[in-house]
Length: 316
Image (tube, rainbow, N blue to C red; front, side, top):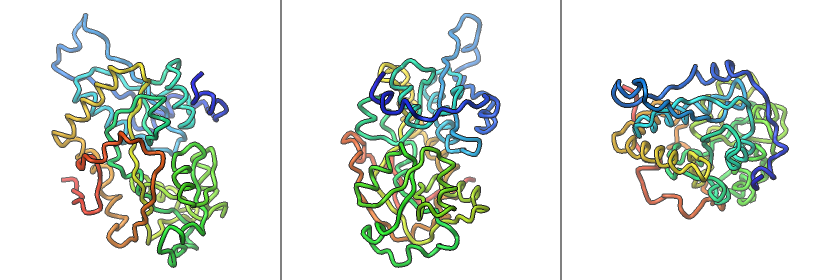
């Protein structure tokens, strides 16, 4: 067992019926068939089966965009593939351990990169979130909407306790900035813990927070109005180190999608409204370092990243 396996062998792994997981993702089975009609003629190779992690809970829709982007990349790479979720729900750490060993059904996953993760898995170094995973806005209780009214720097923010998932890289990033963190192994429980005053705020990325606050308004949670906590970060697709062919196909397809504009069209179709709703121009941006970020991160390719002065296109 690899080091991820040793570290996360006690991770929670919940069995969920395949049909329920598929309904959550809004996909019966995502079928990617690219090329002319004769590509499926008798005698041709069967589509490649690609297994991705199942949603962590029935209310977790964070995988919808990465899955659509993966499908787009495979289409642009002209790779015939059938996409299916894993049979079991598992934490992100457990999924990475499974993928690292190469002995599970998983073919690909997505998550924030780090030097350690890139040593154990094969990254496709194109940030599928355009770096917005490192732009963090806080969920807070409605009765504390002005919690950061007197915060003007990271030192001021360190007076408050953040909540994060136990195996999320954000824990290391926040603690390196001297920001206290309370952790929990379960994604859904973090919202309940915030509502129960177990910690002060729950930093969420710009591409997550809008949908999450809608689901948890009944718990008395709102979006804090004044701050953005930002660090350089990249969400990548990862595969097992031996699966070089799949990594090359995904990278080739993503590069084509960037060039033809379909990457940005899909990204902003999902997130334009969420970005605009945050009103970045009205917020103080606090920057912190990310000690886990690998040196190979392509920060110099401006087109791969979101910038505060970018024009956010609207769907036609």
